[in-house]
Length: 91
Image (cartoon, rainbow, N blue to C red; front, top):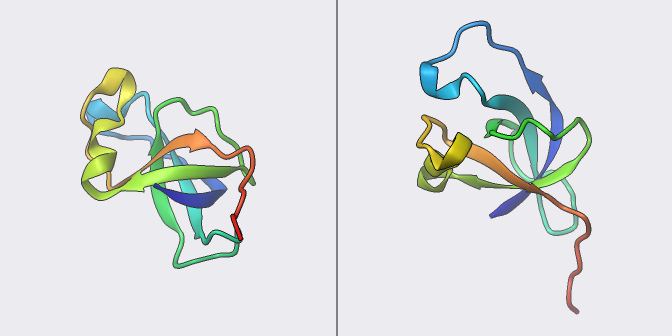
């Protein structure tokens, strides 16, 4: 799992059937200090309950495939799986 901040949404008028109930967001990956780390990417969110500016955690690659509604497989490379309430770094 990695951290990211939601930058915005992606609007699509046509989607494959598996993606009909899935929201798409532009996310900026973050490091452990919540600073940008890498390039923005598109991630799915089966709940669609996230919003711009929220810090979330996501999975990528093969782990993202199993994040569709009701646990269905969907054709994605990154998926948001939760909202981050706080980050604690042990010194």
